[in-house]
Length: 220
Image 1 (cartoon, rainbow, N blue to C red):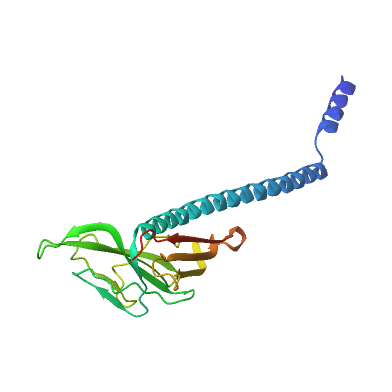
Image 2: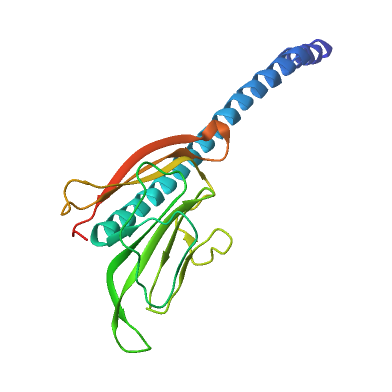
């Protein structure tokens, strides 16, 4: 009976894990866990980058479509180079834009929409405007003849951003109005060039660079 009892105790001791085996197992598990967690975090970063890039590009595409559509059906492109104030009469100066690309710009034009003046009941053409300043693409528009539009960096409440800059940083945002000076009946067209990055973290940033243009359909 004593022999059998000692044999059982000996067999139980042989089936247990040693301290070295436990340390090696924990070390292997820790390494595998760190690799798995790192891969998981990388997947999350890539997923966030993909969604951020998609949302930002969709936003830019929408803005480009809106700008292109409105400029095509607009007329009398006017690009002020100094503070400009438009009020009541909605009469723009003659169509004029400086030659060459401009990094800080604004462009005013008549939209095809009209309204009735409250003062005398006559019809007026409503004005829309776009501008780029301090990293923002902004828009202003008249919805009534009496609405004012101010181009002034000191007093800019009439212009509102139309591109979210939470994740978008522009390194280039130029505008150029091109005309055929030899043909008085030729319509002008506007060319834009936007470049920059999407994303906040340096490791997950994506870069974009594109151009688009809009041709005026009807001659001034």
